[in-house]
Length: 152
Ligand SMILES: CC(C)(COP(=O)(O)OP(=O)(O)OC[C@H]1O[C@@H](n2cnc3c(N)ncnc32)[C@H](O)[C@@H]1OP(=O)(O)O)[C@@H](O)C(=O)NCCC(=O)NCCS
Image 1 (spheres, rainbow, N blue to C red):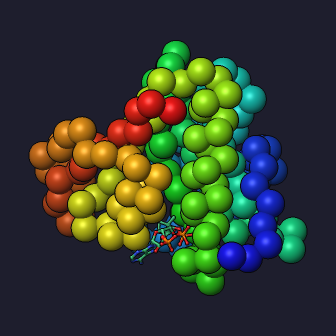
Image 2: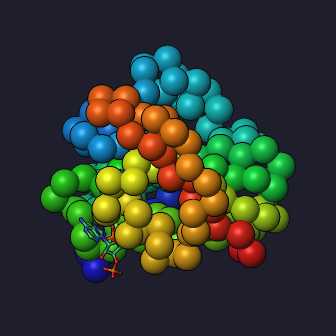
Image 3: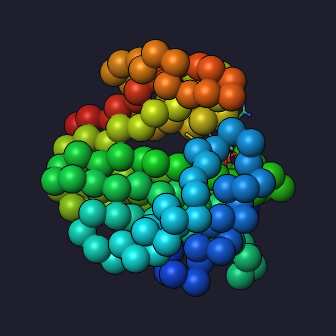
């Protein structure tokens, strides 16, 4: 474990979030307009973004959205040099705690079945497969696993 702080993202963090996302081959990739919408929605009652900081540098982020009691994780990325040091786990733990605090009933997400690291992270927190979306991803074509955490 490295010493990190996880906090809610602010508009100033978006540039770091974009840089991390662009540097990650397996993460979800969004257009600039999606990040502009994210920046505008921070602090509203439907969007949440967390960043992990180490020595004042943003080394990871997690973005989600929610409608009522159903929460969704849209993306999670840890900087290459920070991987496998518990940063993803710390952010996910914080995300789940936030959801619980807002009376969430479930958290779901989609992930490439070949994404071993992400699947291992979610399995650690007892997300379970609740479905599959055929050929959901392109480049390369692949099914998405829908994973869900209930009983928060
Ligand atoms: C998925 C990701 C966020 C995990 O972050 P991380 O900080 O490395 O994760 P952690 O160190 O907290 O590890 C969590 C668990 O997953 C397991 N894990 C992590 N990377 C793994 C890998 N490459 N292979 C196998 N297991 C792995 C760890 O063993 C760990 O369990 P542990 O407590 O037994 O050690 C990171 O690999 C990443 O940024 N991937 C690229 C972006 C991406 O694909 N995001 C998913 C979009 S849905």
